[in-house]
Image (tube, rainbow, N blue to C red):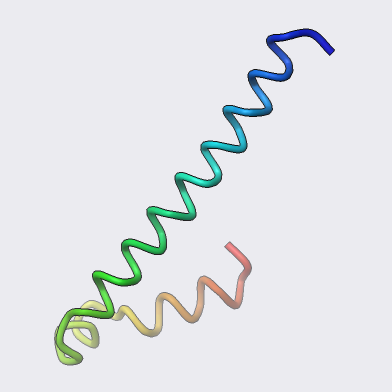
Length: 55
């Protein structure tokens, strides 16, 4: 393995962590909204469907 391969692997790992943190932050924000607004935008349904599909 050369240095660029290792760097790409680290960048990929950091990118995944950043994505997970952003998803958690979005979930917290959406869950802090009033229930009627979450229902209007379809938050509970969309989130459950995404988790079921494994995305």
